[in-house]
Image (cartoon, rainbow, N blue to C red; front, side):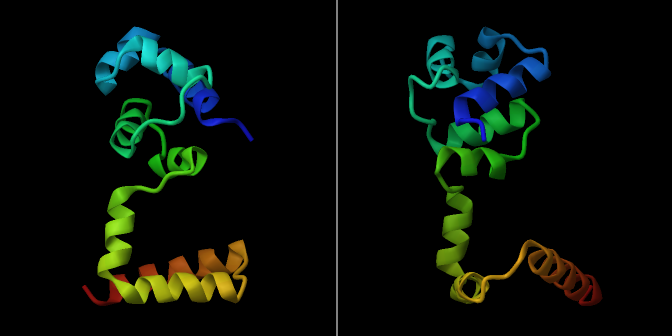
Amino acid sequence: MKHFGETIRDLRVAQDLGLRETATKVGISPAYLSRIERGKERPPRPEVIKELAKVLAADPDVLFRLSSSTDPEVVDYLHDQPEVMNLLRYIKETSFTEDEIKSLIQSAESIKANTH
């Protein structure tokens, strides 16, 4: 699995964006972005990760996983909704498989669709 900085660089190159252009769009210095890409800096603050995801057309959740960080909006939601935390604990404790989690998501989507 690639590191955060390598992934950022690969995404940037795939979008045919230069280092300076990307840094400007994200609101950070090109030198800082270069250090991130080369693994000389730790992954940036969550706000910068979100902006990188937006500029690079990437899934922010993937970048957060690579950065060993968590989206602050998700953390806030978990604090505000204790039952969601209970659900996550249950999924973890009962060792849900990937297929079971996908099935759970489909069930949740079906429930939501039937309530509107």
